[in-house]
Length: 234
Image 1 (cartoon, rainbow, N blue to C red):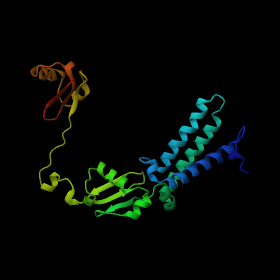
Image 2 (image 1 turned 90 degrees about the vertical axis):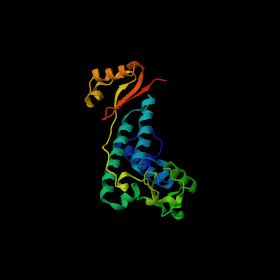
Image 3 (image 1 turned 135 degrees about the horizontal axis):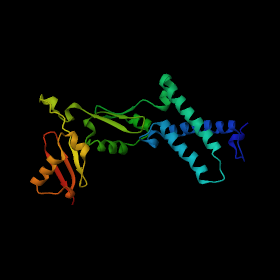
Image 4 (image 1 turned 45 degrees about the horizontal axis):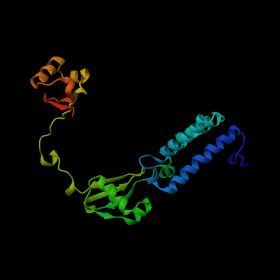
């Protein structure tokens, strides 16, 4: 009954399908045991597909004695499992909790929730390391820190420690200023220059005023106030 599990000279299509199904759910189980940080930056299913796909296609491409039949069958089954699991998870909450679990609260109102650290399987050192990436110096400044399903940590500062913005000071908002790269590596960028409403003749006149050549410029940017900023090769 478990012939597909053993090493064989050849497998039937059904045995290839069974191998793919068993491998898929085994990877889900194993990675859940390892914890979310083992596949940081990726969702659980995305990590599984990336990991398995590379191994499936690599062997027949590097070994002339292996055919592509088994790889294609396995990859097709995995794609079907991936799509069906994702779609089912959208409508069935128990499955959604497995493949895309809710965030775990690590810090609340400046206090570390130690039990949740154990649940997320990360240490205090890792927590502080991640918070330092967000330029958090004191844990008491944090209103909320969440351990996301992709293995990353999201933090929110208390209002008294947040950066002041114009709206807080009742200042009139400034218009968004986007600088166009009109010269790059000594060459004119005509498309970007056209978006500024200027032409090549105007740009050359500006360079002449500054007594510089276009070939000497690494980057030249132009904003909506017609401020031309030059960065030279060094």
